[in-house]
Length: 128
Image (cartoon, rainbow, N blue to C red; front, side, top):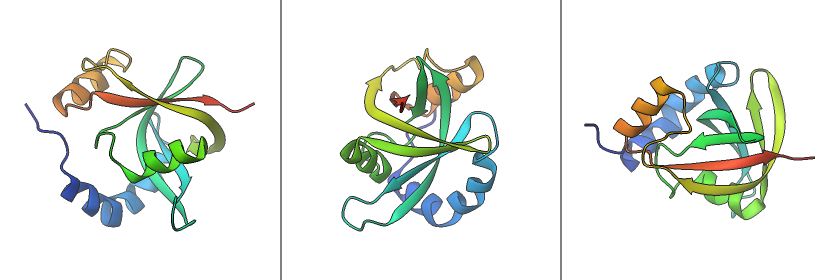
């Protein structure tokens, strides 16, 4: 079984992989870009994520756990932009949930999330 993704890998991904993946994540099904503003810097950031439409909104897998900056930023703001399939959607009320079996995810993705021990997700609804 794979271990949770380490924070060192998260730092490498932030600087190297994310800019490349960002191009794909804007259009590919199952991926998107969380657009968030830094709590301290005020700078706009874009973070590629695995995401699925669920319960009238979007559910984002927390593959690096709950201690990621983008999650802290969107929770502090209460709302954020989300780019997926060539459009930008405003999401609000981000809430962290827990499901060790990832039963909410499609079967192939579910197995991947369980192997990564990505037990947490964030659910957000579409802003009116």
